[in-house]
Image (cartoon, rainbow, N blue to C red):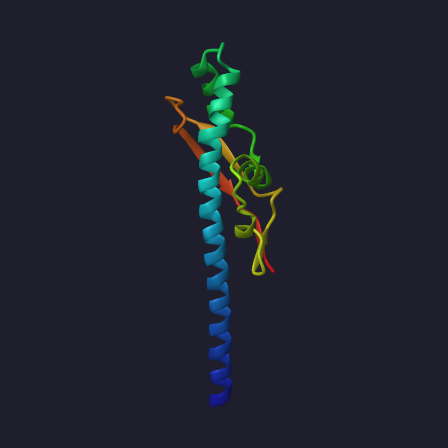
Length: 132
């Protein structure tokens, strides 16, 4: 009886530690994805969008996107931006021996908010990962 209780406690402890490690790893990935996404919006998407609409009334254009958001940007695109434009490879944070994130279904959606400066936006991050 005592052996059965010890085995159950050990098995439960192993299960909790495995879940804690996995959630900690994905939590770090979520933070990194959020940080990379902020950089992408503020230093790539926003300035390029402003350049493309230089002849337009930016408040009107941004207010339309405030209603519907920009198209979602996939994790794969964010990683490519950082790998090729900034020469930093963050893929290890989204795929390793413990878990793998789907770079096509993981995405971020940006919604500009008034007064429509480069730091004036809401961001919704969806990170789809599975334990290996």
